[in-house]
Length: 386
Image (tube, rainbow, N blue to C red; front, side, top):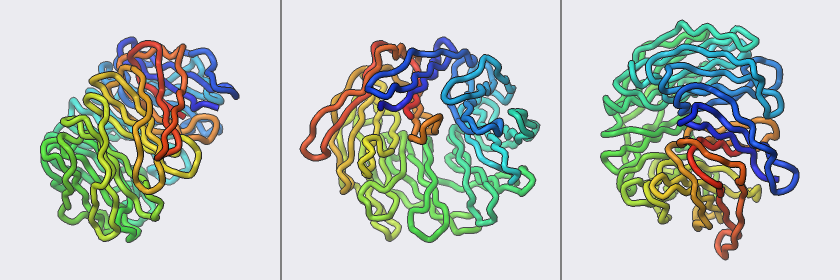
């Protein structure tokens, strides 16, 4: 069947959920109110009942909205959580090692991180507030220092650095330690790029037209960044193994020249750009997953300028070919998750889509064996594919 989809509708403050049928069609759209200008989503079992729930960050009313899920549907009962000014990105993890899923959200407007520690049944203690750098725009969590405790990494756009907040086993975090990365950091991925069992950071630098990679030392620190040239004004990236060599590569969108490209990891601490492709106008997001379930990594590129989403199927050697595209209205990409069937889910932000006529369209390609797009009837929302 088709992937399920969740849409966050920025203009009318809702999300829309479309679950797939066994055939190539969707069930009727179900819409849920969430708040003003939803911009980021994370999902997981926040109640401990075995079902996936959703937390939505609402940029304009400074809240999070927790929707309680049951097999892809959501209850009319919800929880509203007040956080800082202009929450822009949310992540989750078990920060205090109690088996419950917690969350952390970046507040762009007051330069803080709010952390919510789960107490069970969807209740959170969210009194933890941490000061970070100027205009934080993204956050990630992973174990940087091998203590089996999750740490936080925040992208401080206004200071041209990343801030590392090492975690304590009680769910609190130490003060941020900053690492310069270059001018205009705006997107981040975390992975072990050099196979040394230490987590590394890769960021796009909007104003330098490079990807900045910081290799971790295993103790929570990072060495001086290495920079790799990409196209003009890179603004989104994703990490995966695109050529099946067991090493994590990168894929990047270049908004200044309407392209996207794959950076092949050479395994020696360097990346090589072998494949660059035309995108739509002003590509703003890229995600990777095996959409076609053939064991090869595919990518989805979102282009805001001409309102298209393109699904590009990979060929296993790090190459791909753009398939058919159809119009939607897109603003930003946020997160990936799984709701009720074990498949990857992806969220794309925009201004409000009517997906009552959404279909997945296939095409033929001699190089990649097929391609496709998400085609929508009309415009403006956030789509999560899963």
